[in-house]
Image (cartoon, rainbow, N blue to C red; front, side, top):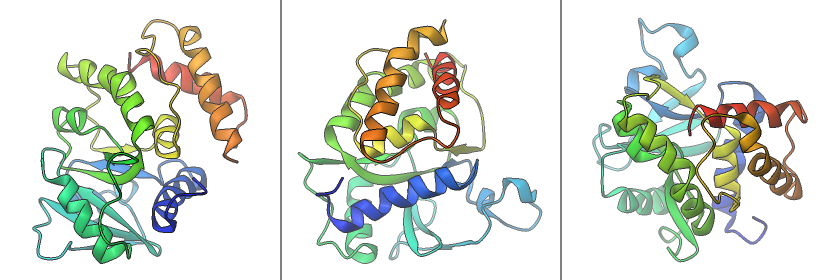
Length: 225
């Protein structure tokens, strides 16, 4: 990440900081803009302390910018095939870049996978630029399993989705996904989880709960595979 353009580093660092700050702080998917906060919504399902802004003249049903603190976040409709163009506009207007980064190096990624998001009824998901190889490794394995689960009617139906260690790994460049997660046994996921946390540790990212997070993450993967 050290050689990334500074705005892209900030986007990933913001996601990481939110994730490490407190459970449920790193939002990556919602079923309706009202989940972010509006009268009548239960406070525990609101994202407090931020504000919604438009992306140019785009309707908010298609895309919007959420500002939590100082760093803007791009949120897009998971069914919108023009999300790369939306990110291009976001990069120019909000990140001070000439446009989206080169596709051979970075992919514009839905932090919560777009196909699963659409099947689960989410209206918007958070989009960032991530390394192309980590995005594609996760897409062939982890995210494929998530879509298969949603296709079979076993999606969670949650109205708010939060980042996981898998989300953080993809954003930070982890490429070690080699097969579908083991849906039967957490032990079957131990090897890839160990590789994930070793990769993150090499980048200075460590879980606050230490090795306890390894077991929890391996178990989480059984509900994906």
